[in-house]
Amino acid sequence: MAQLLKMENITKKFGEVTALNKISIELEAGEILSLCGENGSGKSTLMKVLCGIYPYGTYSGDIYFSNEKLTANHIKDTEDKGIAIIHQELALVKTMSVLENMFLGNEITQSVITDDNEMYLRCQTLLKQVQLDVDPHTIVGELGLGQQQLVEIAKALSKQVRLLILDEPTASLTEKETGILLNLIKDLKAHNIACIYISHKLNEVKAISDKICVIRDGEHIGTRRAEGMSEDDIITMMVGREITSLYPHE
Ligand code: ADP
Ligand code: MG
Image (cartoon, rainbow, N blue to C red; front, side, top):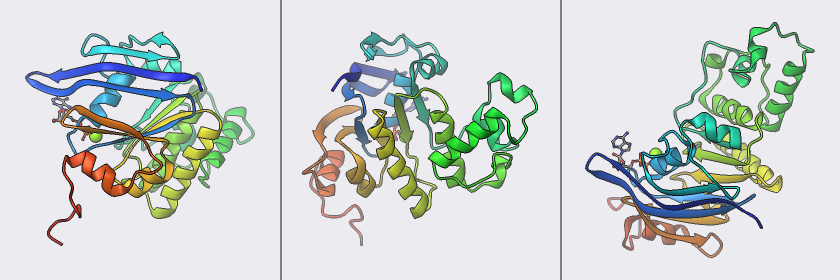
């Protein structure tokens, strides 16, 4: 398989704090990598470096996407190359409709959209893809959080995405919505779309990952193939010692 992403020796400091210390990860097209680590270990920071939220020059190390060096100054630069990130805090405009959000920033939002308009139909198709059964004219604020998450993913799919990054996507999802999301990620994989998945829920991580990468205090602890790894193995790598339960006082 072709290599899609290579992040090499990424170091990111916030003042005196070293949030990431020489972290390297690699990803092939259509591969699903889970990024695991305790709160504050550096997962989100690594993804923000990748996406250009932290611009080139504010970190050290190299990033290659499709064999091309990434020197993004803005998230827009990586979006254009096919990288989409979905954060836990959603970025939708709650007072606007699903349809308007879907194509926000696109000229069509300025024009009147009828129900047989191309964009309306395109929006319906995208919603169907994420199995979200709502009318495109629905105001986003009226949807549940899980539904809003699915709208964000549908929005990402409306662009030519090659790498989808999900930063703790299921925190506010119901079990059913989580199931839809995990199936969707597998479906995208079948279309050669890669995914970096961040979650605390190790059963989800186990269920979908090809590879599992563990970081602790900004250090890369290891990346292993998911098959054969137990949840306990992942926890041991995350915390640096063997523990029998995540909840030792129970
Ligand atoms: P995770 O996503 O794994 O929970 P983060 O990447 O958010 O961890 O944070 C990693 C470390 O970097 C933490 O120590 C956090 O306090 C610090 N950090 C993250 N963002 C900032 C920031 N904007 N300014 C200063 N420190 C930050
Ligand atoms: Mg985070």
